[in-house]
Image 1 (cartoon, rainbow, N blue to C red):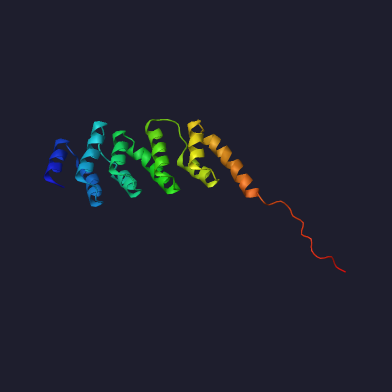
Image 2 (image 1 turned 180 degrees about the vertical axis):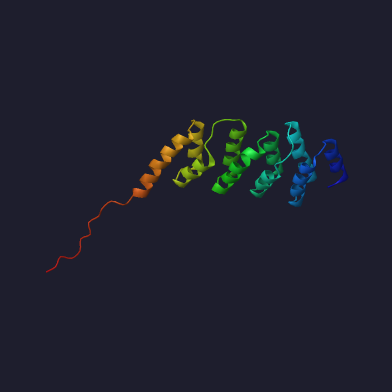
Length: 169
């Protein structure tokens, strides 16, 4: 770290445990400014910084430093990181992921990432999923719809068809 960053860490009374967290971040290539900002965000919320793993998971899922800092400043770095990573793995567009994460940061109701993935697997588009979330769909309602959609999908084109062959002479 640069000496200016070290001075900032000293002013923040960084503990040994927090230094260990910062070392993880630095070894992964996180900038000095982001490390200091993450530590500052935790201290602003009156707790020590212990979220290096959550931050690294988000960076690994292609979230930008500004997005990770936004989660940290909202004090939701640990609580949102697994869902945020899962939303990327589902294959949703960046715009849809941003919409869903902003809803969570604002404490608005949204579906869990597992229900979103299952709805997507039943053939719903991202727009259809977002429409259902905007209408206030709960996880329980999503599970019912998923069950119906999966049953329809699994039984389509399975009707009995009589095979008629040649008649014996």
